[in-house]
Length: 492
Image 1 (cartoon, rainbow, N blue to C red):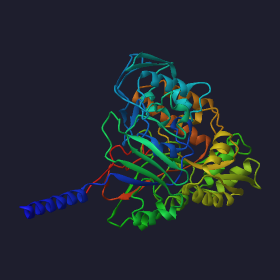
Image 2: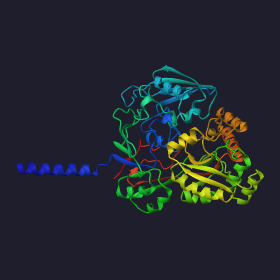
Image 3: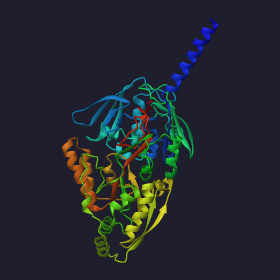
Image 4: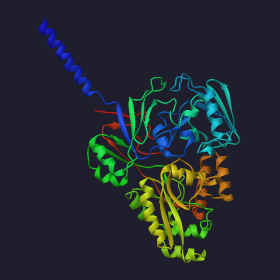
């Protein structure tokens, strides 16, 4: 009898061990190339903030889905008045912040009023400019009244900059973010990693993962060894030049998708001689997009001629407006009184598309007489010197925010661009809900930017993702800057 019990016990242990061995993993290490400057999406322009926190830790009234669609989030539904100016949001009930405090309409009012306040530090303050007032109807209902109809309002509320925060934790979110999402912040080892764990009081569909570590891998050359060793299981934004080393390995999935990342040679339009249209047009003719795309994105980028993703239904192909033409560029510089050329600076942030692209562009502009001094800067320096203080001549950056053509109408924006005709188009666009009319206006806006050669339009940043073949749920496209882990899981 004892022997039989021993056999049964051994069998049970073996079965338990086998079941455990077959259970899917619930942890994930994700490689990211840039460390966020802080962890508050409502107080910074760096895409790296949203890449860690969007949809994972913080939620908004709405959210952007994997195909760019607007989905309910903290708002379970909404009603729009006949004049298009009043949005009444019905909120989910029973929702808690990660510190245990309750979420309700007061938090929505606090967040929206804070984002649009005169002293707001929100990097996308323009998203909230149309809001006239926010009223709490009851704890589960909030009414937002706009100054005028705005066709993009629900989409705007799905940006990372519009996530809902609590007054109790808003001031400390930069170091210890507190949201309502399926993951909560656990730790940040500066220079190394940021760790999230599953929230135990999330009221929605729980995440499959128990733990997600965002490992900071700044050296592109270190990404492949990290994958091959298993130290990192996913790089949602992978260096295009390294794809060839992974593409044929069956252990990994390589996903090449689209982004909202317009990669541009940004120009300070008020800095002489770039305040002259002829000079900006000369730069556009000097740029060889194919060579830049081949050298900076392994040939995977899609050329653009204005500020719109080719994946958008509103995209107008204006790449033929400035074909690569060195002679034409020289003639325009001569017409501008700069036949002997000039010197300028090119400030380059850390991403490889900027550093590699900068070397190529400097060579191309040198061919027409523009001698660039390349100045590498870290993100904190770029945000301070270029984005905030506008202390630059030229720079290279990908604008990964969705549907953001309106940034050229912002008077305090770092392009220093000012064209009343463009502003008029954007103003009309903001007042228009009709889909066909919006398409027409977006086309007109693209044409004005191209004609004015506001910046050097280069290409749409490809989204190159590489991850373990047993992982499911990571986004293949990037309609918004995010690594949404809400549906990510391991399979066997």
